[in-house]
Amino acid sequence: MRHAGKKLTGTTTKQIKQVALDLPADFVVVLDAFCDAAWGVPRAKIIREAVTDFVQRELEKNAGLKERFEEAEQRLRKERFKVVSINPQSTDGK
Image (tube, rainbow, N blue to C red):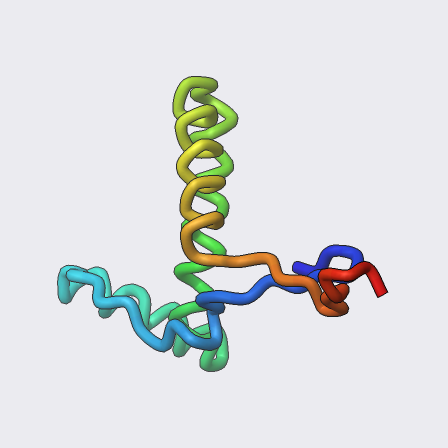
């Protein structure tokens, strides 16, 4: 995400290589079978799309959950990403 004259720095998806998940073996078989049947679609893509759809559905159903989610998301983005100026100005204004 870019802002006028600024960029985000911090943890990015390229920097996060793996997140350990404790998934049941039978679930992994289903996931891998689907990935294989879908011509090698990466696991991460399937999980990302499924989680995104699930979260959106749940937030649409529950206003309280949506409010808590938005607060948590904002807090986590502030903790993990820092906005820095691309063109920092000198302290004397020149």
